[in-house]
Every structure is written in structure tokens, then in C-alpha cells.
Length: 144
Image: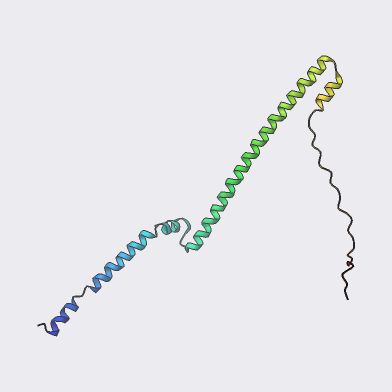
């Protein structure tokens, strides 16, 4: 049989302090290992809250996307301009051939027709809006 004093000696040798230290160390390691991206963000943007850093990131992503779209549009525009220049050069060469053939035959009317062969773009006719009328109540409406 054990005496009460002997039971207290085991409590004095408790592992509570050791378990507490091990638990704190384990928590620190776990938090540090799962927060590496936060530490990287802090290194890049400074020590701020994650919501503030996410706002900065989304703004940067939006600016990068806008720049990418703008570059694509500029590339399309330059490609379209180059294609138009090639078509215009081909039309000019074709007109020059037609004019030279017409001149060789001595037909001035054909030469004039060939030189004016280029397409002219005319804007569509725009009809003006009807004149503004004063407001009138209908037959079934009254202010009474």
C-alpha cells in the first residue's frame, strides 16, 4: 500500500512543463511551415494584413491583364494595317497596269475609268429626327 506522500512525489515529477514546451515548439513549426507564402508576401509587399496584400495582388493582376490585352489589340491593329497596305499596293499596281494598257491602246476613257476604279466609301444617309412636339393628353386621360 502506498502512502499519500508517495503519491505526491509523482505529481511533482509531472511532465506538464515538458509537454507545454514541446506543444509550443510544435505549434510554432506548424504555423511557420504553413505560412511560407505569407512570409514571402511580407518580404515583397511589407508586413500587412493578408486582405491588403490580396488587394495589391489583384490590382497588379488586373494591370498586367490590361497591358496584355492592349498589346494584343496593338498587334492586331498593326497586322490589319499591314494587310490593308498590301491590298492598297496591289490595287495601285493593278490600276497602273490598266492605265498603261489603256494608254498603249490609246483609249483615254478606259484610262480614266481604270484610275477612278478605286472604291469610294460613302456614308449612309442619315435622316434627321422628326421635330419635337408639345406634350398632349390623350383622349382617355384627364387631369380632373
